[in-house]
Amino acid sequence: MDSSFSLKPVRPADQAAVRRSNLALVLRHLRDAGPRSRAAIAADTGLNKGTVSSLVAELVERGLAREGERERAGAVGRPGTIVELDGRGVGGIGVEINVDYLTALALDLTGAVLFEQRVALDVQALPVAKVLDAGAELTARALRECRRLGVTPAGVTVGIPALVDVTSGTVALAPNLHWTDVPVVRGITDRLTRRLGPPSFPIRTANDANLGALGEYAMGSMAGTADLVYLTGEIGVGGGVISGGRLLGGAEGFSGEVGHIQVDPAGRVCGCGRRGCWETLVGMAGMLRLAASPADPVHDPSLDLEQRLDMIRRRAELKDKRTLDALAQVGTGLGVGAAVLVNVFNPRVVLLGGYFAQLGPYLLGPMLTELAARVIAPGIGGCRVELSWLGFSAASRGGAHVALQAVFDDPALVPVRPERDSG
Image 1 (cartoon, rainbow, N blue to C red):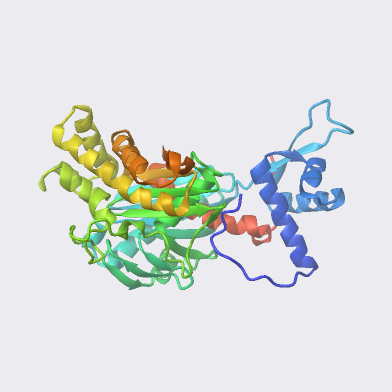
Image 2: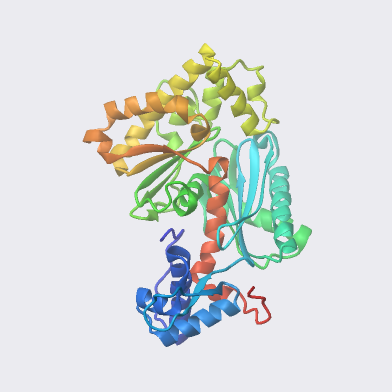
């Protein structure tokens, strides 16, 4: 499954580089195809059996693979030992900084969750330094838990609803956070160093919706869908596009800001300073404005996001007219903007995440009506709309996936562990 986050320059390969490439090939094959005998790995990858045996031995020494049971009776020739992905000693951490919450999540190489925590935080109301302090502290908690479990971190990826310069690790513009030219990677690195010492792993930052799309593509309900548009509803609206199995990052890596498609030139002023952006109609702030008066507790950023959405859901279940009217209006607006994306990208699936997934049953009807009316291709181009299972963890999962992808690209980054217990 190719979900690379960036393109790498191609250089002539020497013998060591070829071996590293083959190590990566075998490790990714174990991830994607599941447990295999050495003979099966050789047949599947085209490598010879001797090379596969040597590569598997090295992956076992690095704690990235382990030997399991013998093949069942009936296999052709002498039964071999099954090899499977291990990686329980390697972890990736994804962190999300959003308008009213922070999330951190750590996964091991097999996708098992090692740590997950979300905290409510009114990011808009705080100085950048305070937000980075809180983000670094949450990241440190995840790292301490990895240390307790004996897991070596492969990296940290910080997702932010922003235009992000991934090369420099700087947020160029985050309209809903009111951030401009914030050196996030440097800020988090400095703060982690004060807490835990200098990190021995890379720290990156990226647009949260792009990370969400990667998280969904790698491990969500629509995992492996080669043509996918992911839409996440937070205070604003973000989107990530997977096309032909690859994330579309854009020429400068600034893709994902679909919430700023203008749908109403005479509409409300957006956080970006322009009028009538799509997210002013269908972002969570817009939905809450329609559904409840300003003094209503659903507007309280100190409450956990799930609590606030549970209030809206309960009111909808009780047939509260204002709530149902608000959700119907949002569903219609969602279809208006999504139709633009379906006409442009012709995805197999439009996947709704964030609060769109939480309140999906009330949004899907009017959304599908608008899509049918506005998408030019018959049958909305073979596209269907699905609800994410990952909820508000998609971006942090995508961030952890990006951190771990470096290991799948180059297993030699993980040191040999000759004394590792393979049991």
